[in-house]
Length: 264
Image 1 (cartoon, rainbow, N blue to C red):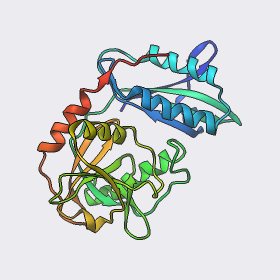
Image 2: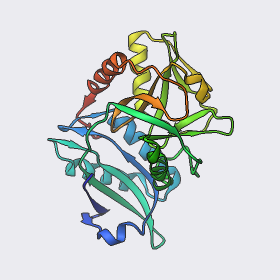
Image 3: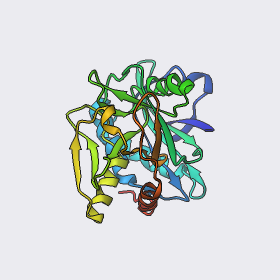
Image 4: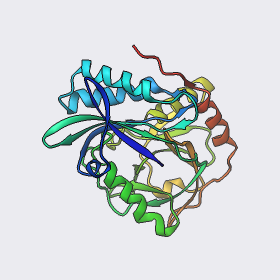
């Protein structure tokens, strides 16, 4: 995806030279899909980002509010965009950055493979490990996989490199999410799907799932960019239910929740 990076100050945004961007260390970040000015659960993305910024950095609430307002002003109200907000460390200073990015094409399906290792240092904070997590996708790509699934020492599912895993077990009409005893990023998209489940009267439960437990299950990898991707295969893993009707219907329900952001 094409992108331009801007640094925030009291005078607004200023472009960051491309050669300088790679020298920055990301402390906190978040991203959301904007389609014709509307976003699914923008307030929840903002709440997650703000909580991490205020707990993990020295950025104060007033500065953060001004930054978010500037981001909103710079995000186009037509087309598909995938802006990224972040706090980075550079020259011993913390800086607020906005990455103005066009959104790549949404993908309805994914092929999964186990990640070869778990690189996460701060599993509950989005940002510090993004580069290392992206490398996981590159590591599994030669097998044909499009998403790397992090597993623990007992081969239990944790999360995707850039996604969260939710499961419809074989022969059961209930939605299973990964138990919170396993440290993983609090997923905004998962939270939206749980709200949809409640509205639809679908039972939801938390469970520890090994890769073998996914046999004949309908497995979704979910994220703010793609919404729901139906897993059609698990490399060196079990056969999966590839029936697309349910994921297509829930994707439509997810998309319908997109609204224009409301600034405080």
